[in-house]
Amino acid sequence: MVLKKKHLVTATLALALGAAVFVNWYYSRPETKPTVDSVQTTKVQEAENLGDAQYVSATTSKADAQTLAGFKLKRDTARDEAEEKLNKVIKDSQSSADAVKEASAALKELTGAIKTEADLENLITAKISKDCIVIIDSGVCQVIVPQKTLTENISLQIKELVIKQAQISSKNITIIELST
Image (tube, rainbow, N blue to C red; front, side, top):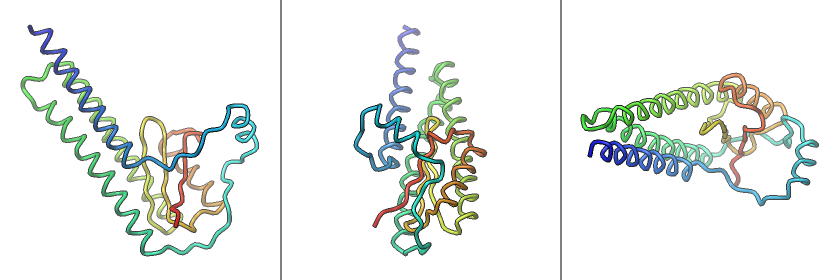
């Protein structure tokens, strides 16, 4: 009977964590590009240079600021829900030791990601003088900046900051410029 309860609690925790990750992914996913065969992709990646971007003017519209604020609100709401669920498992007296241990580890990882995201947002905002959003999940970092912000130099600086602060490789960093 005890073994079944432990499995039930662990399965419930895994399901809740999976739902929280899905909600976070759903509200923070970037626009997808059509896939290409691996031979062409490898050739394209070899030809690309770190920091390649188009030169554009650097003006930010009020709509961009509102869009970024909406993205931050959705991201923070999803994170708060996940954190609340994990804290419930930790504080529940009926939770097994394994469930509490898994929830504690997940909460520690979530807290670390939140701190790293906040630090990177502050550093990138200082570099580009505009708000941005940083989303870190499973070793992948996505940075969303206002439209007409990216230049070759700024793109390179953002990637360098992410590599140094979050220890994420450059192939796992995506910089997204808001589109009109």
